[in-house]
Length: 305
Image (cartoon, rainbow, N blue to C red; front, top):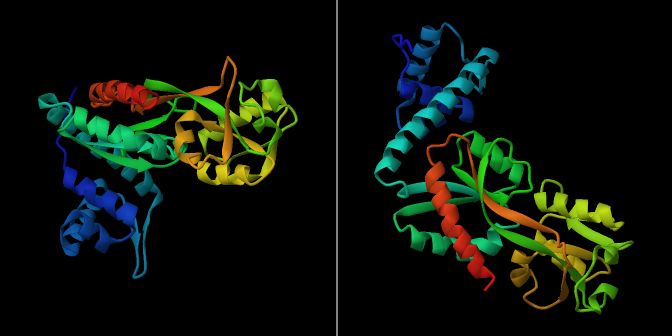
């Protein structure tokens, strides 16, 4: 591979990315811990070196030009590669030291992290875990952009090109109000029992909704118009009404702690989801995340004891 002389520096690339993200030279300078005149001079130097105007400036705002959008996107990838280079060097000495940025979906986070986070910190005392909660699509995009190192999601969701390591299976259960016809029996429930039932589900964007909707479509159940933004809201609506819903077993202990719902397990083959850690293909952190997933597998199994 041939290497030419490069007039751009990593620091300059950080400057233009900061300006593009914040649409402000002042805020970009504050983020980069330099004076605004110094940052402005460096950005102007980059534009002269590339012979391309990256930003449109006036007294009120800063806009990225169309050529600037492409070049700044490339700058982000370069900075991501540099971060991964530095991270790989650090991990070579101790692959499970430092900070891991991990995303988690809302139908897992509140129910697993209270047990999982301390278990992982105990297993890897030199490791710092920084959790971010969001829907699957947003988390996958952040991993691909290098903003997160890994995500804890349901494997049945669309994960693009991410690699993954399962940590356990989370069966679905049927939840009904105490007075509901399906709440009168305490045995296993079959798919046929859902035929012609009214079912409440989560709002669009939740992968758990997609899985539950697929099951309902195969049984003849009807989805009601209301869509909850959380499992907590879903449970409250079912407890006070005449509909039923599906819950991941992981959430039952928290969401039905007052016993307002009758929980019935499905007969085999029971619907379920597979929880997994996923990360960017080719990431320097792949092996540490696999080790993290291995420890998480033990911790997840213990939640069912």
